[in-house]
Each structure stands twice: as C-alpha cells, then as structure tokens.
Amino acid sequence: MTYVPKDDRYEKMEYRRCGKSGLKLSAISVGMWHNFGELDSLGNCRNILRTAFDNGVTHFDLANNYGPPPGAAEKTFGRIFKEDFKEFRDQLIISTKAGYGMWPGPYGDWGSKKYLVSSLDQSLKRMELDYVDIFYHHRPDPHTPLEETMGALDLIVRQGKALYIGISNYQPKEAAEAIEILKELGTPCLIHQPKYSMFVRWVEDGLLNLLGKRGVGCIPFSPLAQGLLSNKYLKGIPADSRAGRGLPNGAVTEDDITEDKLNKVLQLNELAEQRGQPLAQMALAWILKDERITSVLIGVSKPEQVLDSIKALDNYNFTKEELNRIEEILK
Ligand SMILES: NC(=O)c1ccc[n+]([C@@H]2O[C@H](COP(=O)([O-])OP(=O)(O)OC[C@H]3O[C@@H](n4cnc5c(N)ncnc54)[C@H](OP(=O)(O)O)[C@@H]3O)[C@@H](O)[C@H]2O)c1
Image (tube, rainbow, N blue to C red; front, side, top):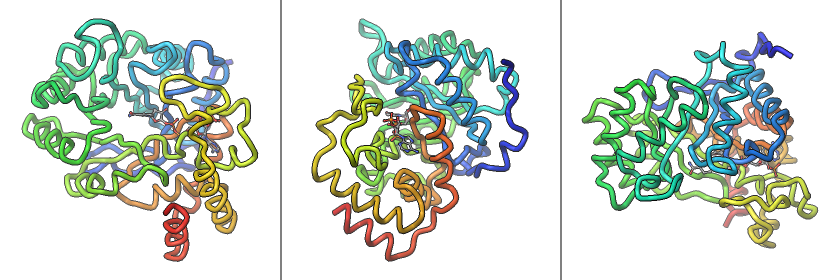
C-alpha cells in the first residue's frame, strides 16, 4: 500500500542543532547496523522506518559494511527508500560511512582517498541515491596521513556526493586534529559519532568538552549498550534478542551479560521505575540531558521499540540525588 506519512509527525519530536551548524537532527535517530541484513524481514524493516518517520525521526544512519553481508543494509534501505520515501528526500538526513574492511586488497579498508571515494560511490549505487547528507570516516587510520583522509572528505563534499562530513570513533587528540584540518579546508566537521552509554563513558574524558568548544555535534551510538540497558535480560536471554540470536560482527553475546552487569541493570531498573519510565528510556534520557548531545543513535529490532524510545524525550531531567544514585550503581 502506498505509504502516506502522518501529518503531525513534526509535532512529536524534538530537533536539536548539530553543533554550530545550520543543521538540526531529530533527538532520536535510527541506525541500521543490525536487523536490516539479507535474512531480515523486509516487512519489518519497512515498518521500523515508517514508524520512525511517522513519529518525527528524520535521521537514518548506515555504513558500507552493515548487513550481513556487508552492503546489505544499504540495499535494504535503498529499496524501501525508493518505494516509500523518495518523495520525502528533502525531509531526510541519510548518513553512511567507510573505514572498516569492505572489499579485498589494499584499497578496501581504512582511510586512503582511494578507499573513501570508491566506497561512497558504491554506497550511493546500493542505495540508489545521488548524495548522502552526512559521510563519515568510520574509524581513525594510524597509517594514512590525516591530511589525506580529511582531504578526501573535503573532496567528496565538493563533488556534491555528501553535504556534510563526520568522524567516528576518533579519540579527543585525533578528533581535534581532524576538526582543525577540515576547518582549514573549508569543510567544517559537522558531527562526531562515538560509542557512549551508562556502561561506556570515555567521551566524558575530553571529547564532549572538545566538541562543545569547537561547535561540533555529537551523536552517541549504542546508547542502550546494544539492549543491555533495558529490562529485557533480567529474566534470562530471550531467543529473539540480539544476544539470543547470536549475531556476528561485534553484536552483544551471552558472555557480555555478566552477573556484575545484570546486578547494575537491576538497580538501574528500580531507579527507572521510581522515575516512572522504563530503563531503556532512562538510559537514553541520561545521555540526552547533556546539551552537547545532538541526537542519540539507537538500533531497533521492532517498530514498538522506536515508539518506546522516543518517550525518553518526555523526561530527561534528573535530580542531583538521581544522578548520584546512578554514579553509585555504576561504580
Ligand atoms: N560508528 C560506529 O562505529 C558504530 C558502531 C555501532 C553502531 N553504530 C550505529 O549506531 C546504531 C545503534 O547501535 P546499536 O544497535 O548498538 O544501539 P542500541 O540502541 O544500544 O541497541 C539496539 C538494541 O537495543 C534494543 N532496544 C532498542 N530499543 C529498545 C527499547 N525501547 N526497549 C528495549 N530494548 C530496546 C534492541 O535489542 P533487540 O535486538 O534485542 O530487540 C536493539 O536491537 C547502529 O544501528 C549504527 O547505525 C555505529
């Protein structure tokens, strides 16, 4: 059936300015690292994307290697985009990335100009798009001069294949250098995409301050620690969960769900109940309370999770006591 998005979709969402740029992103963004591969249900993928857009999510995140197999998520997205979203292209912020191994030989990985330019060309073909809104270097490359990598990103923008540039997984010192080079080239760094959740907090040691000072946006990935920061694993490992499905490529596994983690999750869950929101919402709210955060980048296996996670925006204020309690639990 022809997709007609809901008229009131922009009334439900909060939009935050990305650093000091002209671009705003929905405070909740949806990524396609998992659940958009070749074996996943196309109908479910479509329902996830429709539900997100119907509720004000404008930003959708991909990478060349998302699948499995690598490239499949971009193909799935491209197909649904063509069928459902084409006429709404100007209402969408679509990102992709390159930086991890994608094809054999010396030109299919890391951060050379050769790899980045070719990879984005392939991504655009898979998604059947003329351009992406944001193109990221996915991880720093210790062996390629930063000037070459940043020069390639600048070139891509000048070629019209991406509107904005981002970096991901860069530590504060590397990020500062990259931001400086991009500024000199005249293509400012729009956004940084780091891993950040109650369980992974390295960004608090310098990165958030740097981004705030330089006017660069921040979109944390895996804000729910891949689902661990919810109540789903408190009574065992559900078969349809990410850990239960035994997914490849860095997905959370049974071994990651330790006694110590579960004990923390149990206590966080109690606090969330006292606040009147499920733990997943509290975990997202805890990140969104910081105004340097542009958006939280969630993954979802079901459309209902999109709706649930958006409710985090109903309450991201924390009392001092609540914040102290969270610190105590996470110690
Ligand atoms: N730049 C990078 O290096 C990098 C790396 C990883 C990811 N990313 C990006 O970040 C995105 C998000 O990463 P992620 O998938 O790890 O994020 P996440 O939000 O921490 O985890 C997603 C999982 O959490 C569960 N979930 C989501 N909403 C829920 C809710 N409301 N209640 C209970 N459980 C809920 C689902 O688990 P179940 O599947 O068990 O239902 C879902 O698959 C990716 O899709 C990708 O775009 C970027």
